[in-house]
Length: 364
Ligand code: FE2
Image (cartoon, rainbow, N blue to C red; front, side):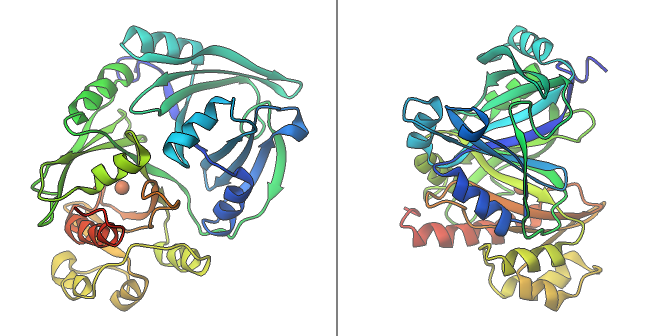
């Protein structure tokens, strides 16, 4: 097992966003995306540097963090990138071991191991740097079983639950020519291997193209696709992202549901904005994917996309960016046997993204 999992990673523990106003982001993620708040740390709990709201839907945990002053390191992150993903945090057997072993394998340190210790218990944390200003924290909680971490207090506030169950994958956008570097990094440091790959022949429109590789752990429970732009006639969506995020970073987070029709109905009722595809997409759908359980008219009405491979099919839909900069967005996905990423939808999807990009004056 150690060869397959050299850092003894158990799972993605949470994704942390640095945001300009965590109080308002908490409201948005509860009432639009259906998360529930479960934990909080801030001035009221003795934290005088940052406040964080811990949200959860299904098993997926989201941490929304805002610094109290411009001196806090999170302020520089928000100044440069806007709201975005700072940390894809991993629960490991032993944070100290994962940190030392990752450095031995070539990772760069971001945070040396330290204890988070309160009367509620103890956790260990360390972190390494990856693309842009993104980090992977390693957490182990030898002596804590409350919400998030020992500096948090329980803080319950409901959301308009949309039936999202867990993280399916999250995707990084990196600079032109850097995909191979990060593929090698995840192989060498995390012991991941290549689960799937797409090139500009799979992912191109008349104007733009990109390459993508999906890195995954041995059990396939953690999947990290990495995108880079490929040469095209116009600026690709990856370049638009890196221009506005002002560095590489996390492009989208895909969350799994087992009833995408109910989930999308709820998210739309909650006011979430999704990418639209033209009606011609649905005219060609039957011929492309064959027999499926869902009613085609219902899918058309909700603008849900479908793709099939040898093992089954998947249904998916993408939100528009959730901040004013065209950066982070979300994917909602349901899998019925298919372990792919919707290759058959790439063209329709990227054309939809390009229409949005053109509307922003960025398809140049
Ligand atoms: Fe995706």
